[in-house]
Image (cartoon, rainbow, N blue to C red; front, side, top):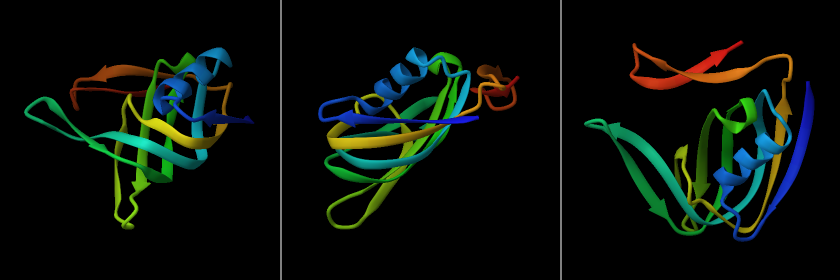
Length: 133
C-alpha cells in the first residue's frame, strides 16, 4: 500500500479530476482517506426513484467529508460527499460530475495495488457494484 496526495485548483471538476488521477497513476484499487477544500458548486445524487436518479445542486460549500472507492484506472468510482453550507447545514450524497472547485481541494488516497476493484452489475440490487479481485 502507498499514499498519494494531489491538490486540485479553482475551476476543476472534482469527480473528473479524481478519475484523471486514477487513470494517470494506474490505480488498480484505491480509497479516498482525506479531503479538504471548498466547492463553488456541489452536485449530488441523493436517491433513485422509479429507476431515475434524484440530482440536487447547491452553491458554495466547504467539504466536510469525501469518502469512496476507486477502481482500476478510475473505471469504478463510488464516492460520497458531504458539504457544509454557509448557514451550517450539511448536505450529502453520491458525487456526480459538475462539482467545481472553488479555491482548492487537497486529496489523499490510499492505493492498494495488490488488489483490483472493478464494477459489475449485481442482479440483486440492479446496480453496478464493487467486486474485489
